[in-house]
Image (cartoon, rainbow, N blue to C red; front, side, top):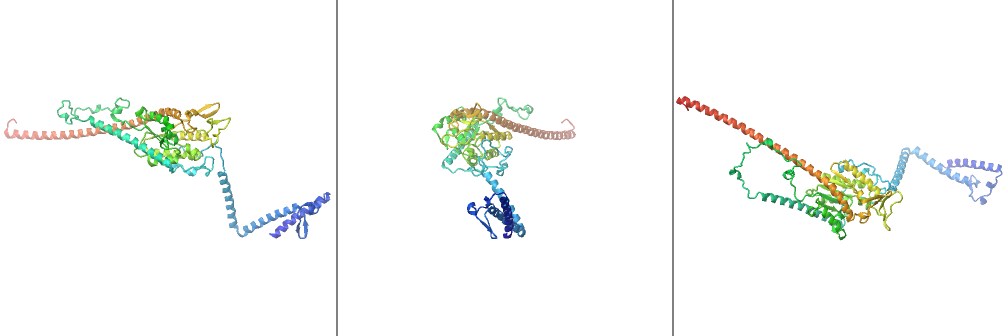
Length: 526
């Protein structure tokens, strides 16, 4: 290494000497001043002093290069395999560190959100794969948020949340008790209607007709859908039949005038609207319950459903789902993770409730801007004074589009877009209708009322279709049963008729033999 360095320095010194000679010939004597006037440090090699700073720098640089070269050649010759592997490891480590650094520090624009994989085609929760998620956090990366696994149920440990969950379980029990009570009343009525009847009426009745000989089986006619007695003939329903269960977060809970399971005086108007709309006793068109808990994200709602809020005997016709706001706003999950959490809940309901319809309500627009601004080409929304700000409108639009696409691909899933109810558009700007919001996130009494007017219309069309489907299935089942019974009775009649003919023929033969024998014995008429 020393020899190589000296050779390289000699080359540099030769170049420096040539430069000095050229300078002398040109009359430039400044470069030959003593070191004290030049400010450089003398370099000695072989008894010769060098005062040129360029020579010193060249010597240091060439010495470094020569050292690295000698070190590399030594290991390549004596430790070739280890050297190659070390080089590969160093390169791979460098690439990994650079990629991780870029990923963690990426600050993507929330004004141009993106979902990297299409989850709208899934057929079960097993099709959701976390390995395909690009980033977990709303602003990029995986560590700048408190986002939970969207596929695993998560229980909140707060006491208030536990109280709200138990309250919802009690609401479900009350709904089931009403169904049982209504069923018992129907049965009591049927038994009362048969009291005092004479089961032996046919013994003394002149109107009795033998159903084996006087009934025209060909004239058998079942009531058809649309006939006046169609419903009462086959499809009697109890007076209480739960139509819809609203499930979700605080937006759903405040719909019934409660927060964390407790009634709020400031939300009494909400509760009144709900009772008038989703309670038939109070004049509502449907019977419904609200099962929301403030602060819930998708994994937490999934836990509630699996632990008491979706029991086997609780079967509303429609499950109305409104979740996702807290996933974005509170835990700052990315759009893709939020979407997976919502779809996980939908697939769980579809799996457990084979006859139910799931309605995915669009994530409601929210704005913390004092003016309610969501989008504008002239200015950007701002947060409230003294508070944090995040504009979720682009993310909400993206998610709603994916949820709608998912619903279009699944028969028992519907999408309800409530965006137009709560937003206003004017002069190229989109804003929330502040007359319908309590705080920019939760609707007020007027907002819930306007919302319910559209929900009822959609529920009406869904429930009618569900009823028609149930009626058709029950009619088909009843029709097939009647046909089978008729064919069975017909077969029994034919069998008895054949046996009767055989018996008559046998008796006739016996009677004919007796007559012949009598005539032969007496010789006279029998």
